[in-house]
Amino acid sequence: MIVNILQSVADGALMGCVYALIALGLSLIFGVLNIVNFAHGDFVMLSMYLTFWASTYLSLDAVFTPLITIPLLFGLGVLIYYSIIQKTLRERFVVQVAVTVGLMTFLRAFAQLVWEARPRALKFSIIQGNFPLGPFTVLLSRLISASLSIVAVVAVAMFLKYSWLGRSIRAASDDADAASLMGVNIRWTYAFAFAMGSALTALAGGLLMTFQQVDPTMGLRFGLLSWCILALSGLGSISGLLISGVIVGVAEALTVAYWEPRARSLIVYLIFVVILWLRPRGLFGRK
Amino acid sequence: MRRNSRGSWLLAIALAAVAAALPLAFLRNQYNLILLTTVALYGVLTSAWNIIGGMAGQLDLSAGAYLGLGAYTTATLLLRWNITPWVGMFAGGVVAMGFAFLVGFPLFRFRIREVWYALSSSALVVVLQVVFLLWKQVGGPMERLLPSASFSLYNLRFQSYLPYYYIMLVLLLATLFIAYRIRTRRLGYYLLALGDNEDAAEVLGVDARGSKLKALVIYAFLVGITGGLYACIYGFVHTSFFSPTISMEVAILGIVGGLGIIYGPLLATVILVTGRELLRAGLGGRLQSLYLVIYAVVLILIALLRPRGLASLLGAWRKERR
Image (cartoon, rainbow over all chains, first blue to last red; front, side):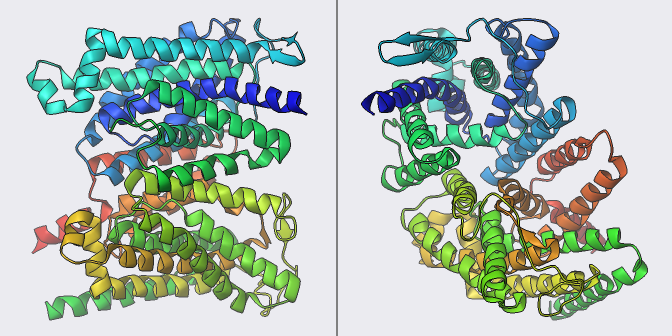
């Protein structure tokens, strides 16, 4: 019994690290640009399909597909920023939502058009398989995905903290006007932050594909999930994001194992609503 | 001013008459009747959304929740106790209303706003979907079919879509009238002030919590009734009625129509939903989702180019003529 519970907790925690990576992208976009992006989950969905595409038609293993999908998503992010997002920066919040929900509809319909509505999965990846560890079973793909996610999250944190570009992103997030006076190119910084947030979903999508299938309606789940994690952690704390991702992942895994697989979203949203009521700034929020 | 208002009333009555006469043009074609009914249905949803979303400025994404509640209430009353949908849909409206109160009270009490309000209302739809999926006595994973009869006034079953269209049209006119009444009363001014700037409105003595709650409850009631009709039109209920997609679509149509303008959301619905359905029928076949791609692009373009909504186009045109 105890072993089973611990197994679920461990599986959920590994999954939660990938969730944190997705939420980090959203946190960058929301924290820096102050744009309410409803389409973030659909970027994940698109990344998963691109991974499928790259591994099927280019015969690349899922481990290497991020080398293609990350630049693709980064480029797409830049394109979407300059063509759509930039025009909504000074608009009211509802207009931003209308635009990003439109984008979400677009991405989903596009995926249905290109890859059809049925679920797709990778046939094989070199990191699939599992090994026993004492009484537990460790899924190799999940372990590697979680480790890579943590590495990526820490790398982004270091980048934001120590690099010149990272510092200008943080400056723009704190006070865009003041940063602009200090010689930070705001438009360029925003474009970079948005593209980086999108590119992070490419890595997450690639990792998810190694142990999951994808269908066009998945975007909504990842979108709401990453908003939940963001609400849980609050803005501006990277370690908070990881912890929140793990909390959500574990809650999901325990629900799936001990109650009802279909009720997992229920638990996540209950956590979300309770946090909104009791701690509107999140558990680890800076602002 | 007085004359202008009478002119608007005359125009509204004339448009309603045209809408009532429209099906006569293609009585034999059921497809066109379905199309008209769908447009009217979306018209009710978006016009009701306008009360909470447009006037009060609360970006509500839970239309699907109240639609589903109305549908399931109507279906359950009919299937278990053989209560006619004519009563059932109002019961559905009341259930949706009660639920909206239960949800809205803490949300507004804890001052959850903007993106967080939008997200929690969107989460609500998914939560209800799962609840009804697991609640075997009422919902469950399978469709629940309503009694099939070729014609039954008691069960609200008709052989043609024509009666549904007229019932929906009546509901649409009632919704528009309620929205108009609210807009011209104190509640409407409160809501508009809240939508404009919540903090400033509260400082001036607007009861934010109470006004928003009233708007939410009225909206839920109207959507709940629509849900009851929705179940009768389709002849079944299913958990997919709790649709986050429909909820978002209602909100986005309301936004691109023009926030707080009575006819704005209806205008957007008539143009965009008709366009979407015609595209769907026209493209059909292999390119099943192409219509949605085009629809999404059009929505984005309108939101970018006309952030004040489609109704602002009409406003500009009227100003020029004056």
